[in-house]
Image (cartoon, rainbow, N blue to C red):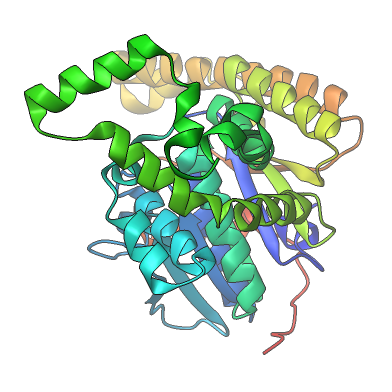
Length: 366
């Protein structure tokens, strides 16, 4: 099985997995491989580190897609690094009923703090950007590099959390017209606001009132959008690909996340096991051959290294066998351990040889 086969008929590939398994580089390699086979591809990351930009040979990435010029591609490769704050602002612009409301929300101090720091906004904004790009239809394939597995669960649940927040009784009370809605706050809270206003000169109560008054006209649009984002996650054109290393802890996380995807009814494609120590390279025993060829000291050192590699290959084999048993026939794509880390286009092309092995060429749609 190859990743090319898993992507047949799909327009969204969501890569999830534990931290430190090479998920960002694997996402980039998938995008590069699909572009090499004629598709127009965009790869998105929410990783603030520069790993994606570095692997693609770019100085930096921003919230807008940037084309990556790679010689020899039949298709096109684009990349971007999500800016959750900018995406949140774009959403407000989309759902504000008029310019006055839009400007009132964007300039509100409560909104500015909320949009920069609200828990889970990064995960939800990633889905928003994915939804936006998919709706525009400018790409044949979108590849999303998600946060490490445990945070990726937040990613899956983000649309429901936003819908639940908007439908919550407490928010509806706060969205009541004028300061009437804010009367739900206790007398003690009101006194606290008064003290803060005297000390800081900032009328937080007025800011809260202005924010919820303006946001009230957009709440329904946000809720409907969250429902559509959730539907896109489970749609037939979407596929989840788990990235793992062959180490026990990473395999455990892959099994855990696979079960959660099944519970949530999400479309699962398969697992990419990255950095496998290949048993074929460590079969047999060196015996005295190393010492006879290289001398006693160097030969014994080579023999110990050979034995270490053989034990690692056996460990990887056993861990992946456990993963295969859990998957019960679902695909596993193996990428071997390379002598050097993958940090550039040459490394991504080397991964492509294993990810797309035996893949059939697909035609570019537009």
